[in-house]
Amino acid sequence: MSLVKPDIETITQRPAWFAAWPIARTALHLVFRRKLFWVLFAVALFSFLLMFGAIYLLATLRQEYKWLEEFITSRLKDLDGSGTTFLNFMKAQGTVTMILLAFAGSVLAGNDHSRGGLIFYLSRRIKLVHYGTGKLLAIGLLPSLTTTLPALILFIEYGLLGDTGMYFGEKYPIIFGILGYGALLSVAVGLLLFALVSWMPRPVPLVMLWGGLFVFLPILSRILTLTMREPGVRRRHALEESPWRLLDFWNDLYIIGNKFFGVDKPLFIGATIVVCSVCVVSVIAIFVRLRQLQHQS
Amino acid sequence: MTPLFEIESLTHRYGSVLALDDLSLSVEPGAIGLVGQNGAGKSTLIKILLGLVRHTAGTVRVYGSDVTRNGVGLRGRIGYMPEREGVLPGLNGIEYVGLAGELNGMPRKQSLRRAHELLSQLGLEEARYRRLENYSAGMVQRIKLAATLVHDPDLLLLDEPTSGLDPDGRTAMLSLLKSLSQRPGKSLLFSTHLLGDIEHVCRHTIIMEKGRVAASESLDEMLVGKADAYLLRWKNAGDAANDVYLAALQQAGAEVSPGEEIGQARAVVPAEWSTRQFFHLARQAEVTLTGLEPEEMDLRTVYRRLVGMETAMPPLVDLAKRGESGVTS
Image 1 (cartoon, each protein chain N blue to C red):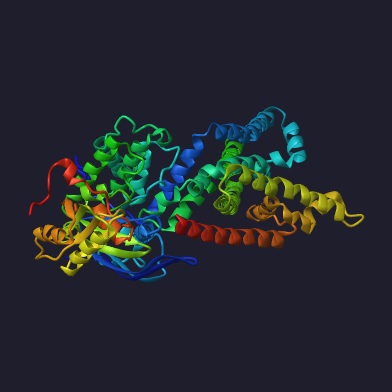
Image 2 (cartoon, one colour):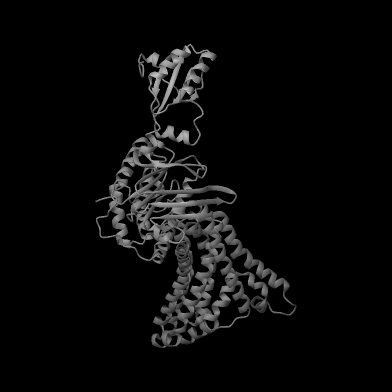
């Protein structure tokens, strides 16, 4: 064996884009080693298990008390197996997903910026864009673990425990809805988190800012919506139609997400503008910061 | 032979700070030492050679290829070991080196196999599954070297590789670097403050000063031909006799630099100079020469002289006290 010439065959050199996956895999690996991640992930799975159990219970009721099952699903749209069931489940995962991302952000990318790990990556046969893609892939996969993947499992469960052929035959577009909404969540939230981590790599300020965006702004949005509503406008309508609701980023994603399931929601254009603007600003912020760090390193 | 790197009129600014100032250089492959004070521009030069930092003006070619246009391709042939940064806490040794290989385009299997080989070779076999944050300073330097070597690069750019090592670790690292530099087709550029390390490993030395190249030549050339300097010490040296002796030396063609104290000087003499002349002139000036030594030229001396740090003559050994004379008349 030799330090210079390997005993193995000639060193292979694959295209630089192949480096994105090792970067993402390593970032996820670092997150999975944290106990806190598994605690938060268990919390995230709690509502999934509740839904899983509820679907199972409904399937049992369908066999013995069909009227009861019909009564429940007519009252609870979240359990009727339509697109809304999975859409609302994914939306409901928002809080815990945001908490998970806030704590994982520093491990996923922040340490590279605060502890000089960036130079390790950029001194190899890759460009900034390959590094950024790898990190975005890692950040984007985390929300998928708590939203898209459980929603797909619930969809499959719903089909398998009911009239399988008919359910999958009729409701297959729901899969595209789940994947589309999941991709939207991953890309938009991933870009936003990566941008914030790039400028604010330390965990505490990051958690505070992230909490401000996903806890404070939604509360503020509701308060403004309800206090500014016209007299006579119902609370439910105000919460769906007031432009102040656009301050809630997760809700904006939900409004766009409805489109993937064929549902039109008010404020769609406004939500699209907000989400697109956030994504564009995030991309610019990431690029500028990484360039800056590259030259400082 | 294609030069290892060619630099023409390279200038680089960090905002208003001039890091590299119209630097031109061409170096053949081999083991090259890069020395200079803090802020001399060594690290900036290395990062420009690596294509990490885009220079403000000038042309930089490594292996004949422009670093601005072909930075990624060149990095496949280069291994870079940064001084302090570049460690990813949370990973173990194998994962770290394996990842470095994958980022250089190697398939995972091949990269891991190579990582195992290298860690065994570098004495990190036992620690390969230990997390990097639990490594000692010496182990960190070795694991970084392994990550640098994993894709079998043609050129190693090493920034202070012996920094933070204990004496044994430093010796081992230097031997390793020397053996690496002697392999055919492999070159290394070794940046350090420790001039002894350069003498141990390198054949060519670049001395940098305030963003410019103060010297770039082979170590032999740097030391040979500059050795016609002598350190003198004499007695009975009143101010007048002292001045007479110094003037006589200068009239005879020597370049004289007075020492810190009266009765000391450093003299650079012409090639045809005979050491007897020192004694002859001393007798004429009525001083007694008590010390005469050819100046030992090492890289440190050359470096100090080139970067203008030689403010005083180094201390002389008093030959009279030692009971020996350098040269007899």
